[in-house]
Length: 206
Image 1 (cartoon, rainbow, N blue to C red):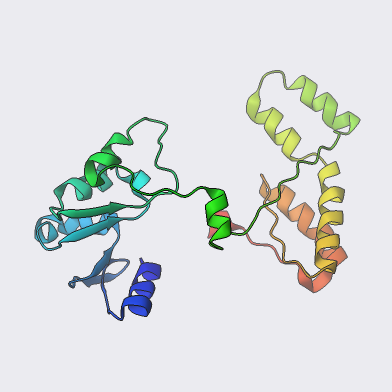
Image 2: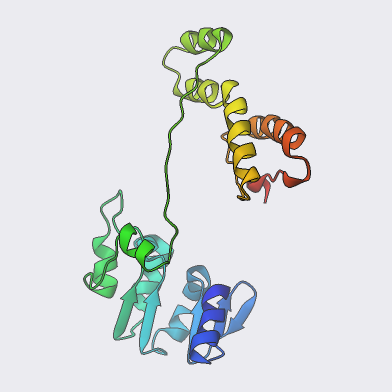
């Protein structure tokens, strides 16, 4: 909401209203959170000529749908990077905002300099004999198998070498892990190797 608010002010010179996140200020141009708009839907349903649905793949959800179909704005635009849904309810997006009129693929986005080029590498490591025995004993327990594979100790050395090489050429790095214990172990190793360059965040707690 705040990002839209700032961009509207920067590029259109309009101080928009905000609805949600502690704000209750409805203006001619208003940026709203779906969950807050639904609480005021009766009041605002006839107020706007145009509505833009950001993250429109959420429109089929109950609260979002309530907003989308009760707003009576005749001009409607839906924006989404992932309009296809696993429940096949994307037809509700098209009912609320019309058919697709423009789409861009990843290459288009790179050429427009809206996203950076991505290089993807898959690096395999071996389990230690002890880890392999635990893996074999786990049978078909998918969660246990995943956790053993996620915690493979050989990953630590690989991650350390990659991080060290990238820091040496001035790169900034973020490392995601499956489990907190693994993050703490990797942090300890990277802290010893990289010193002040390294910090740890438990994003789940935030």
